[in-house]
Image 1: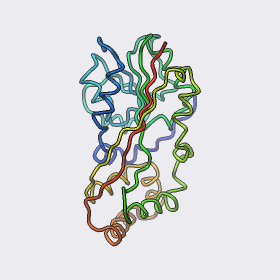
Image 2: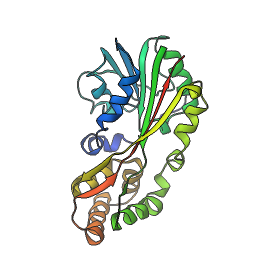
Image 3: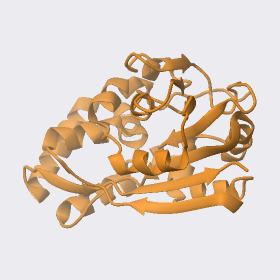
Image 4: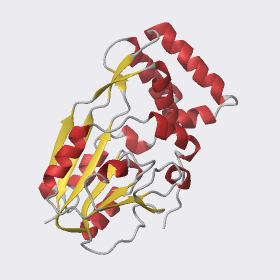
Length: 251
């Protein structure tokens, strides 16, 4: 069992407050593949519940699997909770109708997780893995400023798999699910105020990690806001959070 390293616990409150919700089309496409009765869904890397809480609307039981106790503490009522890495979680064979991982798969040993999901899912059950890239402004100077932060200041805190945009699709394609894989992109442009933009940056593993490495993290966030105002104005800002959705059905 590998040791778990928390990357989000220190900014769990920012994560819950400022991470954008997933577009409704993501859940609509997932549910199209999962016929009724929809009894159990397992959400891996559940974080503060952005996926698990939505799944409660459609499933009799939702289990949020998350190793970080500070993230689980931000999870609202409803889902059952299992504090564990996805690689280490234990569920009965063929007991789930859906297994999801939203913006979490790149933190996992994907090959192991796919193999475990194949065991947990009933025949005809669905694996749904979805993510968005580190966001960039659709146009203009904010795009360049965020690219500079990501590529220079935040770079040492960017996990290697985040630098590999093909990791998720490649790993699922090479698993037992590969023959039944359906991949698509869902457009998702969002408009953020200045406080929402800074809050999102604070919630990331790389932005938050970089700031915490400094003697005065708050001074960095104030400076970033100052530089954004100087180069891109006061907002609101339109950013691209397009979602890559991978859906696979167990034979």
